[in-house]
Length: 67
Image 1 (cartoon, rainbow, N blue to C red):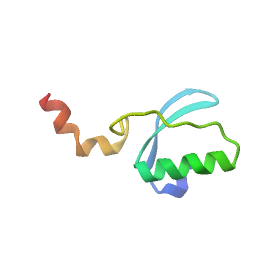
Image 2 (cartoon, rainbow, N blue to C red):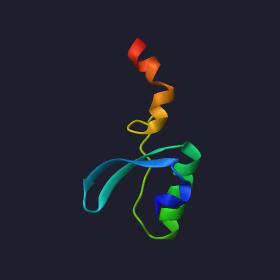
Image 3 (cartoon, rainbow, N blue to C red):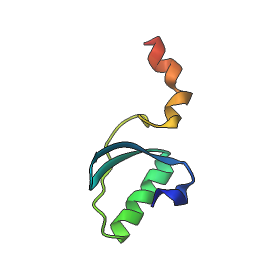
Image 4 (cartoon, helix red, strand yellow):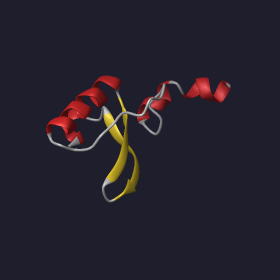
């Protein structure tokens, strides 16, 4: 399912056989949520300010290290 976003979304955590957390580009996540709704897959966004557990954190890592 995530392959169509070409690395813009990554698996952040696997919580069980039917439960996972993804992280990544905001637009891609929005598209994924719409796709899940159309395919009757239970999905929801978690309100966070940054894409934790993803390669996107590398761009803002220094901000966290400085704090």
